[in-house]
Length: 247
Ligand SMILES: [Zn+2]
Image (cartoon, rainbow, N blue to C red; front, top):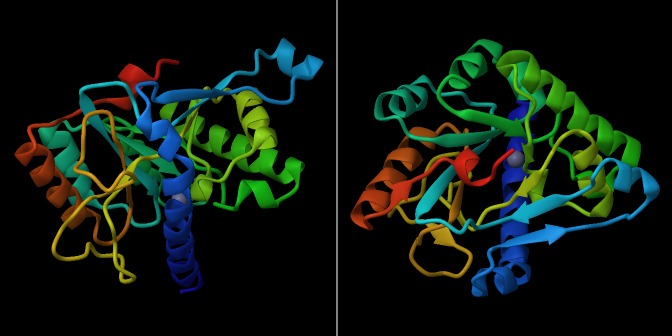
C-alpha cells in the first residue's frame, strides 16, 4: 500500500512539473531546432569521457513516439497489443519495479526498448551526487542484466536534472536525457480520464515529432487504445525512438 500511495504522490508531482516545464520548454518547442545539447562541468575528467548529452523533448521526425514510465503495473494485455500490432515503445523502467516483475520485463524487452529511469525514482537534483550516481548506475546494471544491452537513454524522474546529473549519466553510458512534449492525463485512480484527450505542451493537437508520456498504470491499456485511436484519426505514425536517437 505504501508503494501505491507514494506512486500517487509521484504522479501529482509529475503533473506539477509538467506545468512548470510547459513554460521552460516552450522556447525549445517554438524553434525548428528541436533537440538541444547540454554541455556542463568541463572538467578534465569530463573531457576524457567525452561528456556530451543531448536533452530531447521533441524529435525532428514525421513520427510520434510512445514512452511509458515506471513499471509497477506491468500489463499483459498491453504487451500483447505491442507484440501483435508491432508498435514501437520505449519504457523508462524503475530498477526496483524491474526486480519485482523480472519475468515480464524480460518478455517486454523482446518487443520494446527498456531505458533508464533510476533505481528508486528520487528527485536526482535533491539528493547527494554520490546517491544520484548510484541511482543511475544501479538501474543501468539491472536493465543490462535482463536485456543484455546497456541503456543509453535516461528519463530522470519528474524530468528533474542538472549538470551533475547529466555528467553522472554520461559516465554511465547515457547519451540522451529524454523528456516529453505530450501526455495522456490519468486520474488519481490510475485510469484514463474521460473524455479521452492528449495534453500537449503547446496545448495544440498532437503533431509529428512529439514524445508522448504514459505510465505503466492500471489504466494503461485504456490510455494506450485511446492514443492509438487519436494517432490513426490524425494520420500520424508511431516511430521508434531508437531510430532517431542513435547510440
Ligand atoms: Zn516516473
